[in-house]
Length: 328
Image (cartoon, rainbow, N blue to C red; front, side, top):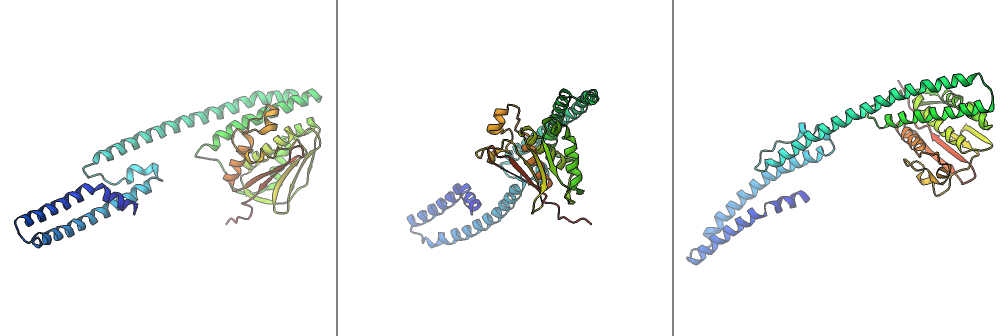
């Protein structure tokens, strides 16, 4: 009804002129003492023809309206599916077409720039890992508190480097997901192995027993999530340790004995750039890690939630939503 009302209002001048002409004819017939019925009959015939023509025109307008509304959600194909502008207001069609061409040009330019950024940081990540590996090798033969501290610091640097590349890849339209069935224990063991140096340096225990479960996921991306959660747990746990287990409903649980998260911060911990009270006091938090974890879990079809009390430790639960999928 909204379109019909706008259509009538758009042609209100034409409707008013028709009614005015009919009134003029009837008034003229009245002044010359001619029966008004003589003018009423052709006026009704003209009205019927006018309404029929208006209905035909409205159907065309309605069809065009449906196409244009559909095109609101198909920006890439807008030029191919736009209806032809053959009316007297063809200027609007030319304006829309020029805007679409400009929009495509800008999208192409931005896509090219983004691809250049991805390529640059991909090369940068591989280049910077070379000196990191060299420093690892230099410290490998030393077994002292200082060397373990330096190795833990290098591991942090390597994590931040990987985080940069992960963030950029998540914003890309193309991904390298390899979704298939994996042994969840293999993914957890790989993440724990990469973090083993920090466990030793911080003198924290790890409690983990194999689950024997399999999950449909992407090994690399889920491993990044687990490693990022372990990294946060190690960062904010001064004493005690970390437990990794599968709960009764099949969620991966990573529980630490750290400083916890304030209740007022919990609703916002997955927001990009949000660090919370403990993160601000640490002065090293970026507010990106958990944001990336949520984005990755969403893309993989998994869920992630955090339970915590300030000073009482934290439990992160990852729901393996794809584990029941069947493959042919």
